[in-house]
Amino acid sequence: ATPVQITAVSRSGGNVSLTWTGGNGPFKVQWKERLADAAWVDAATTANRNASVASPSATGFFRIQGN
Image (cartoon, rainbow, N blue to C red; front, side, top):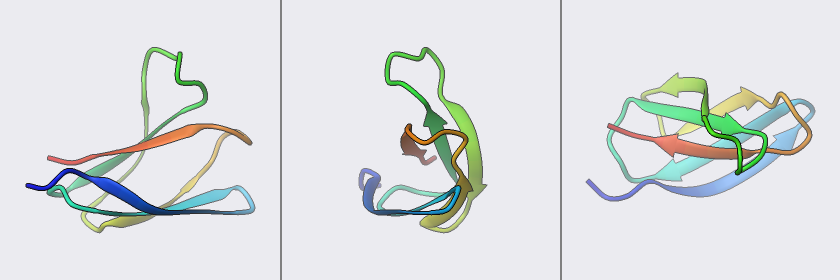
């Protein structure tokens, strides 16, 4: 499988929408507030290559984990 690459990110209100290419689903969208935080938190699971998730903070980092 090709590596997962996030191709678009947008924010609307308290939600963040992500679109990506590559990888094999199902996908986990994961979030953490600071890169120094030890653990990633699961924000959503989807079979698609896009997701809209609630952002618990005004700043943060997202990653996509495929199978």
